[in-house]
Image (cartoon, rainbow, N blue to C red; front, top):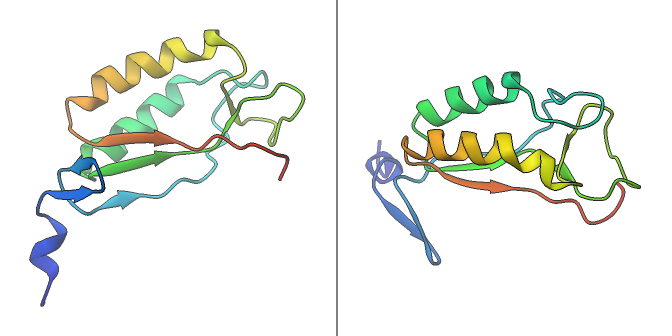
Length: 109
C-alpha cells in the first residue's frame, strides 16, 4: 500500500524525534485507586502499549487540582507522591523507545 512504509520510519514532529508515526491516543483507564494513586494495573497496561512499538504514547488525563477530580478512579498528580510510580515506569518503558506525554486537564469537564 502506498505510504504504508512511512508509518514505520523515524519521524520528527516539530522538535520531537519519534521512532515511527504510530501514536497511542489517550483514554481514561480508571485503573487508579479511589485517592487517584497509580496502580500496577496502570504499569502493566502502559508496558504492553510501549512493547507494541508505538512512537508516541499520550497517557490518560491526570487530575492536577484536588478540588477538581474528573473521575472517581482517575490518575492524580495533585501531590508529588503520585510521581514516584510514574518516574519508575517511564524509566523502564523508555528503553522501549516511545515518547511519553500526559494530558493535564485545566478545568472541569
